[in-house]
Length: 101
Figure 1 (tube, rainbow, N blue to C red):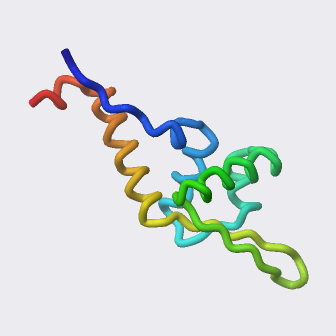
Figure 2: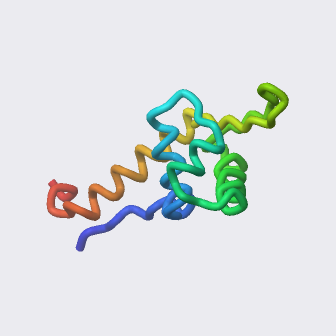
Figure 3: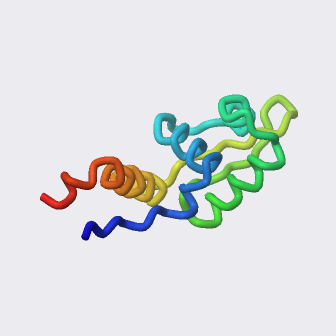
């Protein structure tokens, strides 16, 4: 019998996974850019970013630029590690025969 690894429930959410995926390829990303890329509402995205921040997967910096609020998100080293673990676990689901070798 094949034993599958549990998938990280925090990353198993489509929007949180999308946020982490976007941040994996950038040093930092603005909230508005993430919202545009994901098609999420500002309210829903804000909630999901808060969950990722509270878990330590991302850092959030709020500041002003040209008198407008700006929210920057950055993935943490723990976030990178958790994302990599999640992807590797998914690979085992997609190709279970190779995980037994």
